Image (cartoon, rainbow, N blue to C red):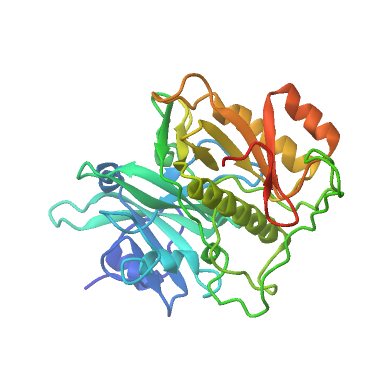
Length: 369
């Protein structure tokens, strides 16, 4: 008879049977929702992850909001998804907050001698990062095939166990890998259909008879988002915070320009960058493989966003090298409206160009044709 466990604290080690007695969930699988316990239990097995081409664990690098635990979604072969039966576990993580559930993370420790039963260590409660809930990442699977996986970014929700053995190993060398352009959808923020129509884009004004480099009033900025984005559905006004509005504007802009490049016959994608000694993985917004151009998109033309974009594109571009093109790529910042003249002056100093979208939806600047 299994002994009862009333409380499980971060750092405690138990079998799955004992964990289920407290937090519910299924007896097998990596993502185990429990409706009656209001929990989504996430089991990580380092050995399985390495064979499948990824690591779960803490990033050694923290940002202003604190530590991040990366957890790779469900699906051991082929591209992972949020759709259908195959994506049910990934949807459970994505929608945990709106369904009133908490995320609980467990990592495999070993086995009970003589029984073969696995033991798992409880790390604590988590929630999805509000600004960047997940990223797409290209990995080399155990079958030798490349595939796209969903990497969830988890933030501690209360006391958690944060120990060195759970930190993702740092990259042994710096690499920059060309990967397919990957869409991120509006589902990352809410799953209900829009009920109040599309959110308005920032107002863009260009004086008649002026060149494309004339300034427009700065649009307000509320946040920054730096992974490939493309929204195909609308957010509801009720669900949209200032940060998600900024993210959506950036995503729509990136999607529109990527479609423009594709319609002109250009091959597009992104670069996935690992830097020696770091545990985090960088990913560029958009790369034009035909003309060797790197793009960094922002959701507003504010000074803050432009300065952020400048730093990012200078950082990323030094890693981008291909056999088809010599030297570093051209650097272009993609904006929803023209920047002020002094921002043009700043960008000219670093040989960074600008493409922006005009009132009529056309792109102005060194655009592909």
